[in-house]
Length: 175
Image 1 (cartoon, rainbow, N blue to C red):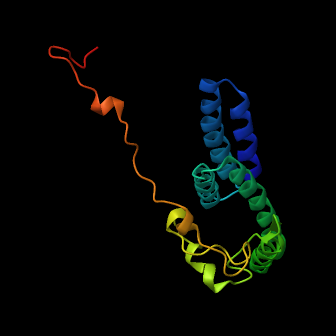
Image 2: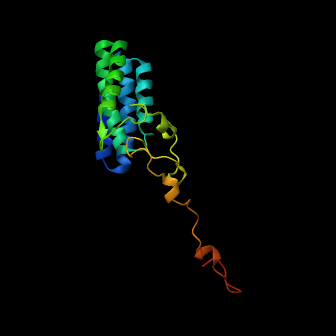
Image 3: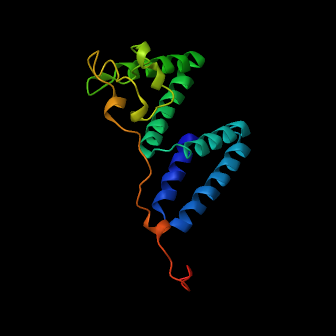
């Protein structure tokens, strides 16, 4: 079902805009209904595939959405082969891969792996640079000055020509 949906999605992208969305929607409905009536798949599988496809559109980054689609196929193959143990094995392999990556010499999963207690504050919610008190331990030497000492809190611009313009008597904003 996932492969069929991906084929319909690619066909819809390559067609002219008004026709492409109609082909994707009608094709998914027709193929899903035919697969259920033929007994190839269950109605629950059609619902799960459609929820997965809709959730894929909620991904904010296109590059991340492509990566998630590829990883989803890997997880489906390993789950079909090994069942629940395969899903757990896939999650372990994914975490091992992410922890082995480095970007500009810094581990990708920093500060979660390796754990650096002093930097866990920015793990879930990133504070603005002007509000940070310390730099990351893996990036800078210990005892290096903070961001906040060299950076002022941003303020709104002082010149607001649109808001501060003086309208002459008798002028209106309709023009």
